[in-house]
Length: 172
Ligand SMILES: [Zn+2]
Image 1 (cartoon, helix red, strand yellow):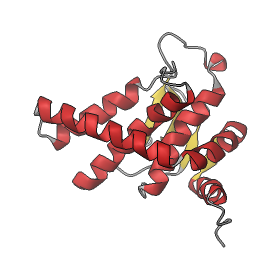
Image 2 (cartoon, helix red, strand yellow; image 1 turned 90 degrees about the vertical axis):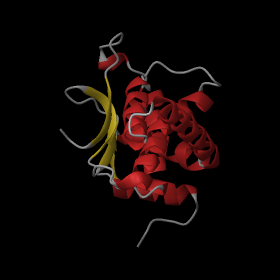
Image 3 (tube, protein in one colour; image 1 turned 90 degrees about the horizontal axis):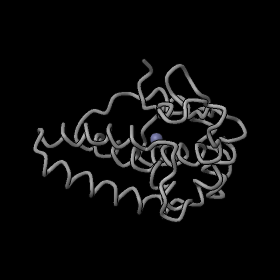
Image 4 (cartoon, rainbow, N blue to C red; image 1 turned 180 degrees about the vertical axis):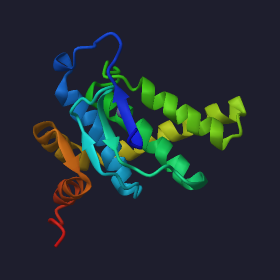
């Protein structure tokens, strides 16, 4: 299994051809832009379905240490935070469920299984993701159409799209 995370094909919508690629591109762009700014390196972000997933951010190293684990929670919540602002508060169907489950597992790990502390941390990181997405809308808005068109973007192209949004030009 490639490390990183993937968004599995939703149970109620198993035909990947029927999935709305635009939403998916925005959702994954939320993850990717968060990873970029949190310095979570990955190989590529993809909206092409794999054997058991619909889309995902692939090829990242496992999180090590508390700070990295918290950053990863933020990046996991960022997909849903993007869907929230794009849909004006309604969740999309493309399934942030697996993201929330992964964030929950990290929270339990960070809080040594203490449920109430873990839920507090989940709430805190979800709020942080919402703020992050608000602050980085322009980068997300410029990355998503590129991802929708190209289907799979390596780290370097993600970086170029983000730099273009910030008007600093591609890296030499
Ligand atoms: Zn996701």
